[in-house]
Image (cartoon, rainbow, N blue to C red):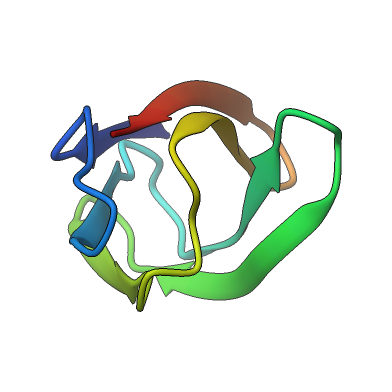
Length: 88
């Protein structure tokens, strides 16, 4: 799997999009977690990504994210990714 987050940097009250590309030949469950710089989990969701497809998840932050640095991690049976997110 491969992941992209956009927009980055994110405005304080914006919507965050996480795009996950699955290049595997089978359906995968991907756990996506948003973590603040202190290691606290702020949001998590399991996405089911079909084989050879792209899934986009939108997260409405509703002004819950203060300006700063955050991390988005994703994990499946075979892969792990971590992306940095800046909130302005």
